[in-house]
Length: 387
Image 1 (cartoon, rainbow, N blue to C red):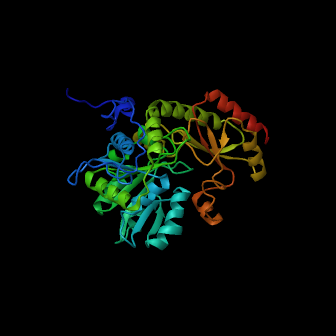
Image 2 (image 1 turned 135 degrees about the vertical axis):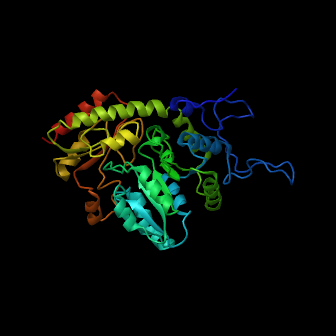
């Protein structure tokens, strides 16, 4: 039977190589084996040693690769492990152009570790300013690191022009697609070389796993990543791969509900007297609303706000919440709130935070699956505690 392209909601159920010939299971089992038996000296089985390959991991990797439209994927021990794996593609003393306002963990990896261990230097620019990107380029530039939307201020990057620039200089481009998931944005379709995720967020979707994944656009690049994974060993374990693959099955329905909730919540927050500013690409008031409509399916499931409150009032505000949980992560079925200055970006200096726009009165909301009216009521009573 001739295959045809399926809708995303169908792909999340069936994508990749999920069949289990051993017992005809409808869902790939968890293979905990650290090693696999060979029949003879000439036998070259698909799986030999768990660090190199695992059937559960393969089912998950092949699924994510297909959802992103890539040639292959590598599942890593965490989102930061996935970021570090991409950096391993670069030669020593490389230069990286990075989106300004990048996630604090990525900034820390580049500035505190890779700069010392492998001589990587980074320039942080607004990637929507192609003149600034061209000015930042050096002879040893080997990668453009794109985060869109950024964490937590939700700035977008126009992917096609950046991918075109990267190809003109024969350098790699990589998108951190964590905030969108392949449901909301597929960067490889714009000419980007690599996509990475912290799978702990929307891919898994249930706040019960740690993992990352890197997807390559072409087979040659995917092969390089697999060799790096084999050498370094920072791969994701089979149980977490199982949880991630199970989470993917409901990605379509989860994202549809969470993003719809986020839009409704963002519109309501615009009417709140104590809210100074709402950051959400799905609002017509967002400066990059047109780009959001062009490049993303929706504005996403994260809303950030700045409120008229001091540190003591903000603490009282978050303590008053009952549905929004104060937590470091995002992307789960439950709604969460994050104080970026003291949490996700806590390792940055005061000057670095100020340069990124991370102020004390900034809060990031990860909108979950709850009834949106209940979420609004929860925030409304919390605002009442600081009036």
